[in-house]
Length: 300
Image 1 (tube, rainbow, N blue to C red):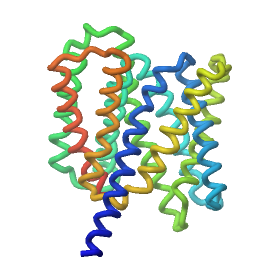
Image 2: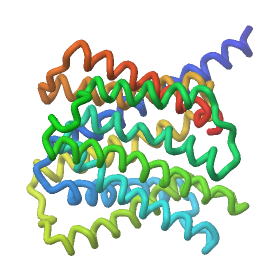
Image 3: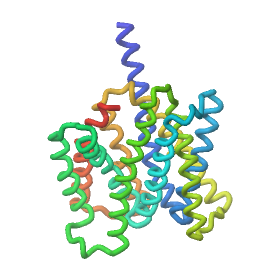
Image 4: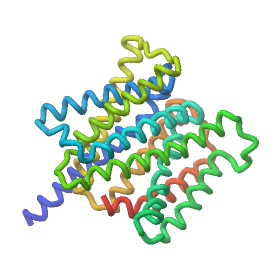
């Protein structure tokens, strides 16, 4: 009885960490919407501050940050995809709102599944064949099926959200590649490197585009520090340290909190109107995403 009790307590603690992490990262798009700086600038500072926090964590815990050139190419590639991911996602948030932008980014589960079928010899699952049309139908119920009636900016935001999903899936695949070099690598150290390299790439983009990188104190700097700490560091550290201790089926459901809560925050904080049809569409989309992510959760 004591052994079972300890097992339950251990898994309950991990589930609580995973829940907390999912709630933390659900606020990501809210921070972006609160900022008045250009989207590329907010993405740059999120990565710079977040990478700095992660680097500090690596140094304090005495982890090895760099383990030779092996795997470095995959890290640089992951950083390029992550920079592109945030570049598109931050713009999508501005154009269509935090809730829909986050839901569109969650379509990455379908692109990951497609990559598995096309490049890794995985079997095409019935969950994927059902999940994709469900999610697309739900998306149509949210934005409307008359594409031409939408404003040009709104349509651009939808395309940017879907492009975010492509870049995020590519980022995940590149980051997983770093685990195949035969060395014991630290996920936190890799994320610190990816964040700082991504920040450097976005810094170049920001400089060449002519956007001002000046920030006001304490408003914008305070929001960006909170954004980096809550979303880039605490949220993902909690998730990373609990994934292997929670049943895969539960992981998939819990991680759906991110797009679900992002939609809720959009309604509560930014007065997004929502009709019963849009609500039903959001539920259908989340159900489709869940079906698409089931295999991914088991693989992790």
